[in-house]
Length: 73
Image (cartoon, rainbow, N blue to C red; front, side):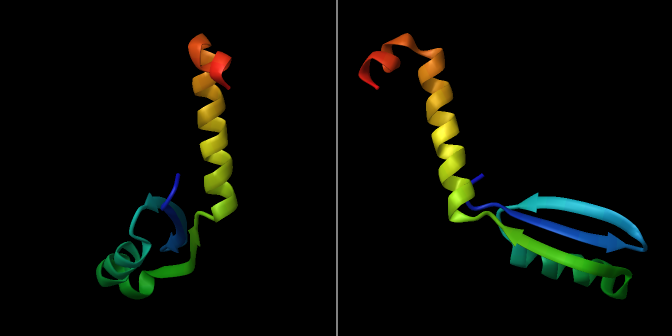
């Protein structure tokens, strides 16, 4: 999750979504390929809060799977 970008757009009226680690490069390539066929472009980067919550959830699930870690926690 950390460092990902979600790109949403419409291509000839059809909704599309793509997740990437380099949103800028993806959008440039998208316009190079499809030009004016792209509308309703939205680029959303993962927020610091979302990254933190994902890390906490991952850590908690590791503790749940490994009893030895729960004793330390």
